[in-house]
Length: 214
Length: 269
Image (cartoon, rainbow over all chains, first blue to last red; front, side, top):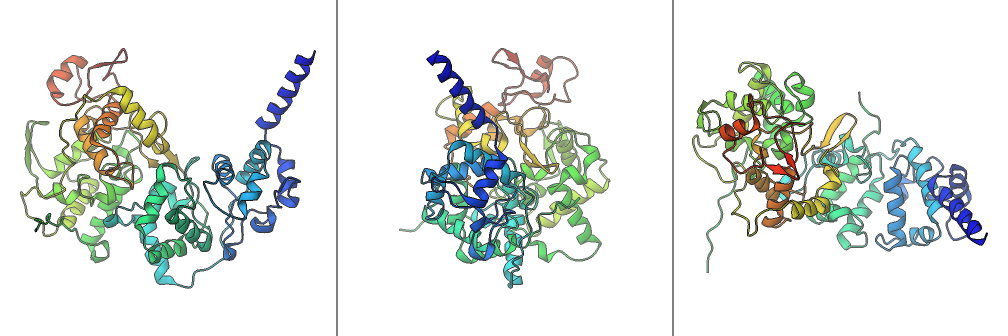
């Protein structure tokens, strides 16, 4: 009898972990939870667009797997961020799964921040489309897919992401405060780029639309 | 104490210097065929690859069979065809084997574009000269005979992230982002890249993308053996048995016709 109860409890918890609960996600996004996660909308907005000027990234359209991995990496200190650390630690497995499903289903939002440096944008475009092979840096789009809209579970979309956030990530890979990139692919790229080149890439990527050209 | 400096690699011209005339238009078309072969040479292709998958940086990169290095070495006698190949007939071979398709006519827009693009990249290169960085790296024989198990381990740790657990590649919006390495959408058993030494040289110099040189030579040999001991599309030269084709066309460092894991390779995928 006791065995049966334990078994059924086990199945209930497995079932919860297996199917994302979008209502639970919505609840956390709007209000946070009681274990330390703040409302996501405070920084990422209800549509998941983030706040580019403040360096809060866009979450809309990230793959579930990528989203979940980032939260676990914040939990495990592979991404050091004073805002996200306590939030990630305050989320449990089924909450993470639910949030990942919710954000991955949102349509990416075009970045409204416009670059005021056309020369930087052009320099960034060349790096994103062709790479900087004299330094062994491949084109951004060689891994992040057509016009940087992302590929599979490991290569997130990088277009329409705010330049402040992008620059911060490159600096974090350089400094080692973000070390969750598979096979150190991004650390390797970041180490090879100058601050000016990073700035150029970030200025360009923020300008690219998320629309798929047919 | 002074060291001899390695000769600077050949520098192809910059794209911004392309003229805006008919010649420039044809060069640009050749470049577009090279970079997006799937879109611009579709009738002649039977897999999911683009030329640029094996000739990185639009065919400019040293140790990645750069086009400027190849241009100055043709026409040439080749054992593979047992005749003198012109640049046009050499590229036709790429379409038949590496692209698992069929050859565009020597005077077609596609071949004309590709030859013109190569000519333009090779501006100023000495004819008939093997330039530094031409072709792929030639590795010394590995310390240990390459093995499936060691190669599989290298593959899982360094390659699967992009090329997929089963070498299937990754695609987005209908475009090939990470090329398939074996199976029905990859190069066939007649392509140069099916040779283990060729693949090992390419991998050592260039893979993982952006981290070329990271793998040891042994790892490059192991993973090249692993990649090239899987089934892929048939060798189009195989008209009778695999054993005949092996004898006639595969006197080289490759797994064609060998039994691997109880499977005789070369049957096609």
